[in-house]
Length: 433
Image 1 (tube, rainbow, N blue to C red):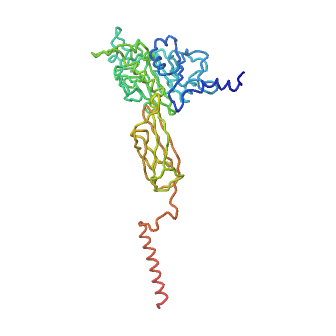
Image 2: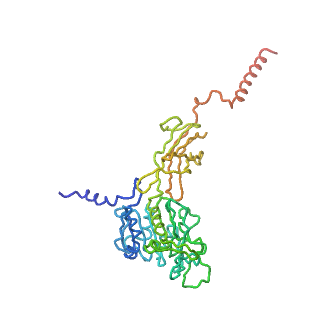
Image 3: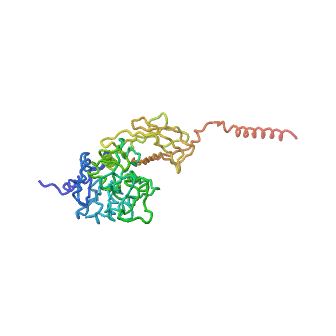
């Protein structure tokens, strides 16, 4: 018996709708765009690490005319890997705007460049907050921090200037230096969204190695970013690398000895660096969620419809972190709650029980109006949290005040003294000439 057309359409759309979700925030379906299909073998260790962790990789040539990121208004992929620095134009319906819309929709991106980087890749990186050197022939050169090889290539630099963040690069320190050959970029230091993960040393500069320098290079020293990450306000994550070779099997297996150093490492730190970075960008680490925001009067359990000024209240919230396979309690000592109306009237640091529950208690301020409980948490490497709940605060009713307020005793005394004086004056006026 033939299935109805509506059921066939629903079945066809099921693979499209499945993927990234709040209950399982790790990316699943990844589109990999390559300059050359040979990159599957030259970068096989990196791709195999993703396959071993359960990702579905769809390899395609970057200028394939059938390329599409979405169908029927639904995105087909959770993440995009752009290992196609030389592509002059993306195929199918892909262009710079569609890739940026993909990120703006909450999806993730890994972008790798090299000395042949095209304007398309440069424009995508610029839209994400990283500006590659405008000189298209420029590479990062360092005459003091390069790897000793038979060619003594000063563009094959050695870097150990990692960011100190266990959530981005994992809790295990990367023991060996990272090999880098490629182009540098700069980021806006005022931006809180773009963070340089791997930077060049103070002796590095960006220039064309085949041309004699006559002017100071545009990028020098530690202002040169080698690898940067972006966490957008919608919690989409982006990795921008100036080196495609950084992810290659050859660099993964290369021994490293820096010029001027006697220490020789049997393998570079590229594999650990690249794999740990991929765990972060695909939300295997640092993804937070909030559940069970609760508040009530001290000594009670039910949430009231409103509070009265000077009430004592208790506030609690649960925060969990995704480990890549399950949710586990998040532990931090810098989570705060604001009791907010136009500006925060109360700001309290929450204490946690090491099981994900954060709580505090405070007195409602002596101001009535519509307040909000606000928890806004922004920490390097973690997804940002912004939750709020509205609650009105009323003043005392007329019958809720104390009968006699100690602070008003002088006024009571003046009133009674006035009445007593008027009574004495009346007696004197009526009965005395």
